[in-house]
Length: 421
Image (cartoon, rainbow, N blue to C red; front, side, top):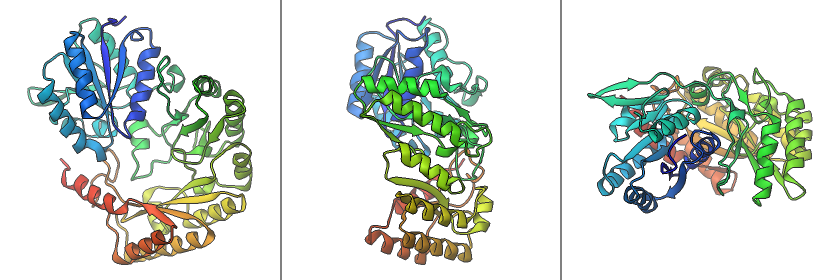
């Protein structure tokens, strides 16, 4: 068992805080590490205070970081600031998440001691257990620099979601419940399949209900889920399994009690357009509290959808929106602009889809294509919106029918492309 004096400091940053909540749950649920003192710290000053407290108490402290590629630069600056004010080998800075997994060497050269590559629950538990025993913390699932070269301790094993709780027992730190990890669809712009595998793994209905009961006892009313495909819960091949979705929703409603509210099909649990059917919508309407339904259309060009490996057509998005409106939902449709290889004809088809969707009653959520590390399209040019698309989006935004940070995404996409190794 790790020493009771060992400390885990969570460098809480949005949106990485959700991942750190899951990791804290794994640490406190494991017999080897459940005596580790876990402390969250949001912001530079809180993080510095936690680190200085650990140094004064002479505890071996591990600082856990997690971020997406968009947050890499800011996290690296925070780490440099922190190291100036709280130096010393007693603080071990460990980083995980999509960017560390896809670009471990770049991440380590920013000053982190260890990078967790892949899924982090087992990796962090084993690291803390080794550190509590006074052993070398390096091991499987980790990467580090030695003599200027990148070394790895072997690949992390895929995690059984039922083996760990979705949030830490004993701490007032709750979050959305991850019900599925991994994605069969392998869209070329998305990290989910390439970081977590193309074979979906699902948290069982029993474990989800158990977590919801914990939330209800702590006074939490709303239950949200993390999944790459809301209606694909329980499926091995990504196709809808409405019987299993219904079993999940029935159990969650019972576990949450009369005041509980269920959110499924809203962020972060969108639905694929080809999965939207009258039967699926009737099922959702029986159980969920969300009025909006997030649908991933991505493009109005069937040629671009095929290039993305999306597995559906533009017409599927139109059909899904019509059905969702008829069922009483407010569709919120995701679109990506400036996809690799997009021609003016493809962009015109997406603009036409935008207008048709808005005319049917959908709200649009726009993104510029990001060449994310670890994806097949990581080396593609950054996404940019053409003038006509930008004007259409701004017009729709002024009428309240479009939202999104496509301007910020263009800047971020250019930065991601410029910093490629």
